[in-house]
Every structure is written in C-alpha cells, then in structure tokens.
Image (cartoon, rainbow, N blue to C red; front, side, top):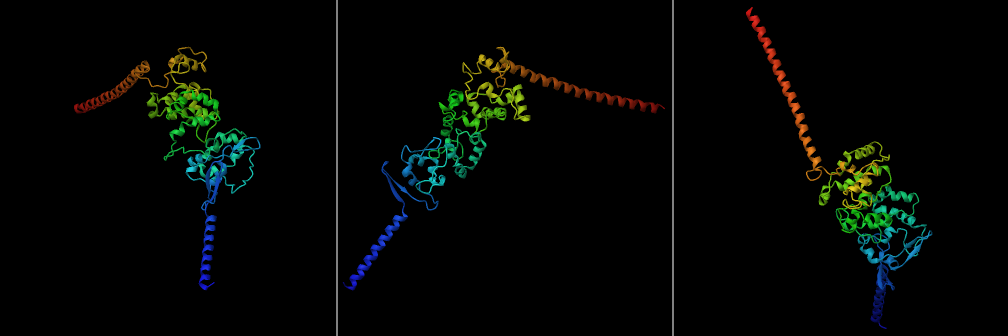
Length: 405
C-alpha cells in the first residue's frame, strides 16, 4: 500500500467518524419521536430547553388514549384521558402551557404515586398551581361559600377545575376582559352540574327562558346575582338585606329596561315605601339581623320568577298579586293591592287618577305657599312704609311746633 493510499484511507476513516459523530449528536439533541399505534399518529416528545419541562406531545403519547382512568381510595374515578385536539383548542393549549407547568411533580414515567384520597383533595393539591396564574380569581374563590364548604368537609363542593376544566376550557373573555356572549349563555348549564333542581326552576323562569331559549345576553344569569368566584352565602341576613341592590343592578339600567318597556324606578319606589324603608333601616343599623319585611324575591320569586303577565303567577294579574300580598297580610281583600303602583311613576296612561291628583297638588301647594310668602313680604313692606310715614309726620309736627314758638 502506497503512502497516498494510506492518506486516502485516513481521510476516509476520519470522514466516516465525523459523520457518525454528527448523526449521533443530531439524534441526542433532536426531539425524540414516539409512535402511538392505537391512534396511528406520530408524536414528538420535545424537552423545552428554556422552561425545563417535558413537552406536551410526550405526555399525550399515553394520555391521548381513550377511556383511561384511575381509582382513588374513596372510589372516585379520575379520568386520565386528555383529548389532544381539545387541549390544543383550549385557552391553555393556545397559550402553549406545558402539562408540567401544572403537574410540576411529574418529570418522567412512572409518575409519582397519587396521595389524594378523593377527587376534592386531588383538586386541592393543584390550588397553588391556579394561584400562580390566576391570583385574583383564586383569592376571591377562597373568600366564597364554595371554598368554605370544602374547608368544612363538604366533598361535593366545587373546586376550580369543576367549573373550568383545565384541559378543555376555552377563552371566556374578550380583549377588554368582558365575558363573551357565548360563555354567558353557558353559565346556567355549568351551574346545573351541581344545582340541577334550581336549574329546572330557572329554566322555566323569565330569566331562564331569555338566556336558554333566546340567547338574550340582557337577561340575568347565575353569576349576575350570586357573583363569579367570591360567591356569598345566600342564606345570610346580610345577603337578604342587600338583595334589592342586587336586583337594581339590572332593573335600574335604562339602556336595558327601555328595550322591554320596564320601569327603572324600581329601587326608588321600593325604598320610598314602608317595606323598603324598613329594610334599608335594618341594613344600616343591624346588617346581620334578619327582617321579616319583604324584599324583591319574596314577591317576585327567586329562581322561578315568572313573566309579569303569566296567567298563573304573573303579578300584573290582579288575583295573583292579591295571593302574593296575603303571604304577609292574611286578612287582605281583593282590593288590597289597588293601592300599590307596581314600581311605576303615575302618568296619564298609567294610574291617571293618581297622576292628576299629584299634578293638582303640585300646582296648588306652590301656589298657596307662594301666595302666602308674597302676602307676608308685601305686608311687611306696607307696614314699613306706614311706619316711616308716621315717623315723618311726627317729625313734621314737632318742627312746626318749634317754629310757632
């Protein structure tokens, strides 16, 4: 073998070695690839070098398989199936949130052993995870009745993930942080997961039909009355005393009420009468003491509020109104409700007699009082003029007597 041949072999060997090194480095540094034969998809499992987490596709290699679940010690079934397309379409998937951003204790397979005894404890273990991104909402949740129920041992009370599935939750607000119309109309169904009986009542009410049948976003949904995360206990005296203000949030909104020909004077007319005045007094002096005086929902209903012209329950029907009044006034006759103006200001078209009597007194009283004031002022001026005349006459007489001397 000549010297040139030896050099060629050396260069060839070096070339082969270099190729092998580059190929090996490429395999090590490039994302690993797995094949999910069951779903017939190829999934890349890339490590995120900047965030240090396992790539979502690696997790979905296993968790994308259907009908996977774990059984917790108390018998609760915990689903382990995550639909890849649903997650990608979710708000978390759209923001490229890694699985390990939430499941921080998972760094590979096999996973750490589950320590939660039931579904509630499992969800509570991710409480800090929600706080990391949603501090305001989580803080409000801990001030609400649901969190307090869990603290008291109620395993049926909802956690964050019961209302917002972290793997499928879509975007719920627009760029101005206002609730999307599509999400607003879905709120009752979400609450129905726990409050099914109340949902059945609500669905037949004027509010429920407006939301569920007409997709009318002007109508009150659950969160308008109960709040979103800081949900208050509706059985307390404080909640009852403030319920009129809660109803007025919508019913004093002229832009909304004018669409349906409804009075916006509901709060003022309520506070001005005996019922509202007493409730307002309790609210300011003893906010934690129950009052028997009626608030809005005592007459109109809570979740089962009917249309005002409903023949069986609507309060525009005289017989129905009389029945409602008898709840507190058992001796009330059929004519008893005639003295109530139904939250409307009197006008020539509505309660005309009251309107014209009020108009008469609005003219009479200022005229009488104004006339009296004018009379008093002119009498005072007249008396001053007469008094000055007398003084001048006395002075003139005194001057004339001195001159005659």
